[in-house]
Image (cartoon, rainbow, N blue to C red; front, top):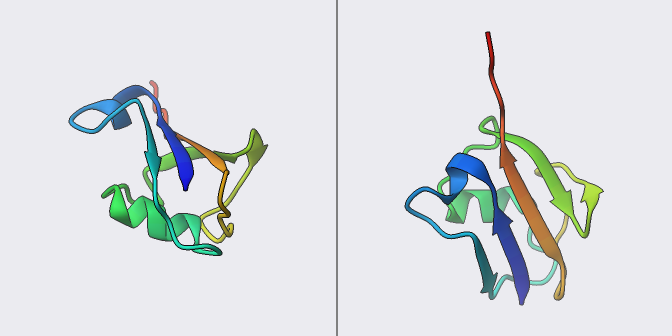
Length: 73
């Protein structure tokens, strides 16, 4: 089981925090797909507080934080 934390607009019509079953050694990009979040939409990915990429493997007990890309002008 992993804990997923979503931030900002990713919480809209989803959730703030949730514990989820996830396959051992599954990839972060697979989790993004389950959440219907494109890898290009995710601005910051953290696993256990450390920077991560979509290719990062996830393990039981991991805490995943997903922040959207931020634009400005």
